[in-house]
Structure formats: C-alpha cells, structure tokens
Image (tube, rainbow, N blue to C red):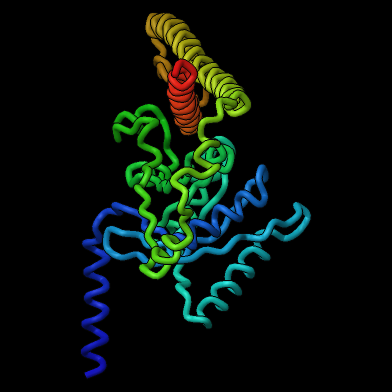
Length: 338
C-alpha cells in the first residue's frame, strides 16, 4: 500500500513538473519585505544580498521568509564560508519548522544599476538546481523619493537557451528574434499579510488623516537624485559608444580581409594561367594555412544588450521623477495662487 502511494505521489510530482504553468506573480509576506528593506537600508550605499525562502505553488512563487548574507572582507574564503553559512541557516530554520526552500535571492542596487553579467551568471547557477527562481531588487536611493522601489526579475527562457550555448552573434540573435528587451522579465509583486497582522496595522493607523510623511512627499528637492541618474546615464552612453567602436572595428576587419582575399585569389589565378601555359598542374585557389582565410570571431552582443537595457532603465527613472516634479510644481503653484 505504501509503495503504491509513493509511486502515485512521484507520478503526480513528475506530471506537475512537466505541465508547470508559467510564473505569473510573486507573492511576498510583509515581514519578508520589511526584512529586505531593513537589511538594504542599513548598509546603504554598500550593496548587499540575501536568500529568499518560500514555496513554488503553480503560477505563484510565495516568498515567506529571507535571511541576509554576511559581508566579508576580500581576503577571506568567500565562496566556501558563504555556502557553509547558507547550509547552517537552512538547518536552523528547518529545526524551527520555517520554510527553508530556496526560491531565489534578493539584492540591493544603486539607482537601478543591476543589469550586469554577474546577475546573469548568478541566475544560471541557480537554474542548475532550482526549476524556477527570481531575484528581488530593492533600490534604497529610489525608495527615498517616495516610492517603494521593489521589483522581481527573472531571465527569459529564450535568453537562457541562448546563454547555455554561449553564442551571442548577430546571426543567432536574428534567428531567435532576441532583442535587448528580451533578456529580463519583470514579474508582478503582490504583498500579502495575515488577517491578524492586517488587524494590528489597522489599530496602529493614526486618527489624523494627514501625517508628517504625507507632507514630505511635497518636497521639491530632487536635484541630487536627478544628477546621479544623469551621471550614470552618461557613463552608459560612453560604454555603449565603446561597444559600437568594437563592432565598427570588426566590420572594418571583415572588409579588409575580403579585399586581401580577392587580391590573393586574383594573383593565384594569374599564376595558374601561367602554370597551365607551361603544362604544369594549377595550384588550389584557397589556402587554409593562410591567415587571410581564417574567420574573424564576431564580438558578443551581450554587453551591448545589457548596456542598452540599463540605459533604458535610467531614462525611465528620469522620466518618472521629472513627471512627479512637474506635478508637484503645478500643485504648489495652485496652492500659492489660492
């Protein structure tokens, strides 16, 4: 009887894995969100990371708990100590009956500058052991402007397939129809609390309809935030210009190689005509040992895609903050006139 139940359970698990629905939403407990915010704000502007724990239920990824990774100096054995720390934390959580299933990680960022090669490599490492995982990105600097800068991202399936082959040439990207917007996929976040916590928060609400934090939203001083966004945007444009120079050099090298090949073939044909007139065997028109016939490797488009993605992110942030500033200015103008 027990063997039959075990087999049916395994068959159900395997069938559920085969027909797993796509990830639609990331549901986070309010306590987990507060832990992430406290950890990231406590070490800002330094960047920190931590582990996400929870459950993978259908199309919903539930984040029920998290714990931070310790910050170590460069001369310590970071990888070994970090793995031991995670295992010890998971063991302790399991002993107190807390969810200890790894479903991803969280990290802080500075002005949304998180789209890097390191993030992609971390995703690929997680994907080797976890079927579905997400990364929660929290931006303390942007949250200080009055909005909770919390987002959940994951790599798209098409990009992961291409990354496993490590082939980001223009031909492969056109074949897969992969553009720079198809690298990351943002998953909607839903914050949920138990009924007891919701009731407790209702009791803590002040009787006054307006609090001091509501007045703080009318502050017009956002110059430092805008300046840093523009500085990062200029750096991205410089990096993108360097990537374009690499591809221009590559295409110039291709044109130069083709001209050398044509000149060599013309010379070889004239030589073969002379050999035929002398009754000798003609030489082959291609010489694989010659360096001009060796293909020039095409630079990877991954860096340029990431830089373009990051540039778009900075532009969206500047656009959002500028729109809020205009709304505040019109509001203050109306209040001043009244």
